[in-house]
Image (cartoon, rainbow, N blue to C red):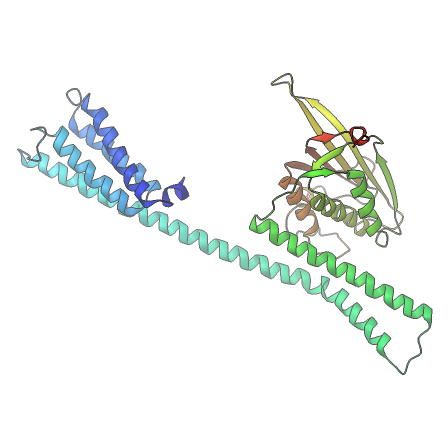
Length: 369
């Protein structure tokens, strides 16, 4: 509301005028039944409320109009600015002074609040960047060092490298480049989330295709794990953002591969579900439900609620990471009006459950297209 009033200064003056006018007109109907001092309190209340939302000049206008309305309409003799006795004159002057002081103090208080918010935002941003730099100092340096080291070895002319060694070095460069690209993508995605620039481009997506494509890209990271797919054969197309969904699945599967021991299973489920909305009795809520589970160590019970916090890394975590992957997942899921839930499995490991209330299109309906 505060921002709305600031957009147009003319509207603020109009609001001040209308607020005082409406209250004054309403009080006219009861001025013979109540003391004018009570009406003065009501007008003072109006000025106080306006001071919360409006800038100082429109509030000062409201204070002046209130004083004039009180004198002209409610202090005898009516419909004149003349005051018969010193007591009424003193009360009118005090009313005007209190209204002005209230307006000025409220305005100063709001300015102080804004200054404190700006200061806190700057401090939070500085802390964010410091944490980010600390987190990335190792995560970016390691793949860069691997790339530079491998290139340096390949460029040495006085060393004869076997074809097998050269291939290993090329693989190291590719692996480090992929890791570097993953970290940079996470940084860019977090920047988009922080700036509120996420505008999902919803279109018909084949979730099964996204899952298989992502797992193919992560074949190197998951080579020591067993991936099981449990995807409905007749899974329809869902109206989702293909790019965001790809990044969501990528981050979750990558997280499972990095935080589980070798030989652990990663299970990916995708299904279509329908719920009846009992409030209206007729609408059906169509859901796309994706579950990614692993048979690793799970999450510490006292820290599981912080899993999606930016830069949060668990105390017992043996692997590195910036702590951005899961927070990006949560942001991308919510950007598509979905929900994500994390829980430890009954037999160990962790379960990530994603639900999207979306439109769907049966694949069978596309056969004749």
